[in-house]
Length: 173
Length: 122
Image (cartoon, rainbow over all chains, first blue to last red; front, side, top):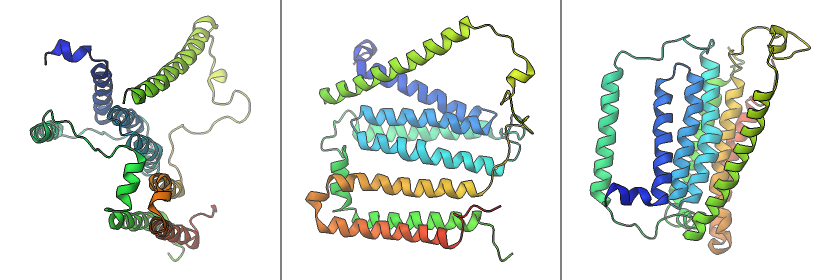
């Protein structure tokens, strides 16, 4: 399939736009000087991934990304930044690192390996009977994955108790 | 699948029009209005208390616990959606499983209440 064939499909154009916005936002996340701006740009990148899930037909996963990642995880990031770095403004702490180029190289090679292994494993194969809707997830969750589902509640409980233990002012001390 | 994409295109068109409307309204007013800022006008509150210190400041650590609680119960809500959709087909087993799931998380909430992290005292 040539590029002109590929670009005339409207879905591919939408994918291209979303992917470019996501890549741009992801670069800003690691390159910006302000950690709060990094957290806010992460919202754009995550919204792009939600849009890609919508394009794949996985509505439930898409809105879960919006609810949990954009809604809660980024809020937690912002609180984490705001309680740790007292002067958060520009240039207070250098966010740069001396080994940024080796890090970029490793990131690029991880991307290469992931992209190659995914295309090598699936190629152009169309995957049917995918888990798309909330019904499919509900069926799987309460048949095959019921033990992991209950384990998740313990993980969440551990996170909650751990967070409280770390953040609480200990009255005994 | 075509119907699915058409539904989302409707949503996208409505969202685009909403954004466009706000951009036109704010952009037109920015173009038309006279611009004559003074330090008093640019203050956060033009009348009332003068702001003290910068906008960037360290927040209380207790906000973090509220954020964490929100995250935990957000994830719980996400698990409730697929359960609620299939509850009639799945029957009592799913009901018991979800009751155990919620009970474990309520244990976490009870721990937070017992440790007094939800009380606001300075």
